[in-house]
Length: 109
Image 1 (cartoon, helix red, strand yellow):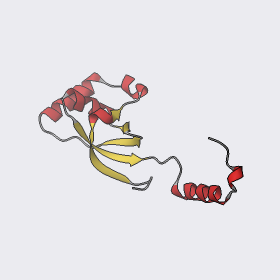
Image 2 (tube, one colour; image 1 turned 90 degrees about the vertical axis):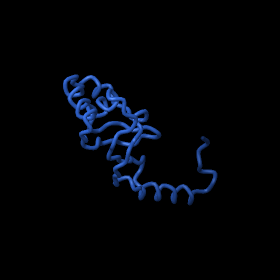
Image 3 (spheres, helix red, strand yellow; image 1 turned 90 degrees about the horizontal axis):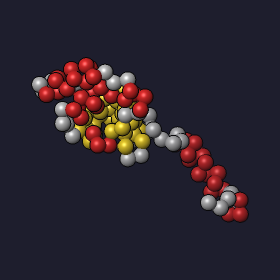
Image 4 (cartoon, one colour; image 1 turned 60 degrees about the vertical axis):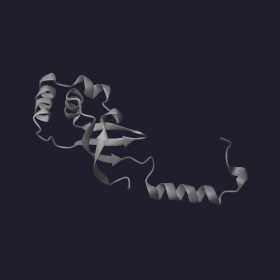
């Protein structure tokens, strides 16, 4: 998947992280309302996540994530976006430049 592509998948809630700032702004009433909807079998819109290594960070839907956890769910439907460290064109250019240098110009790691 390219860095700018998204995919809708089911993500284990154990791998989802909510930032401290977003966690502080949670409304207990909203979480409870979503929890009741989930327990009644009503579907909620997919949350928006960003993949960060082996974990996912919430971009949109922290109340739905909290409600799913409160309802005892193990997975949540999410639209996931992967963020690459460097765009592929820059990465390819950098690799080409590194391969063109003589071995003596490489700095020790």
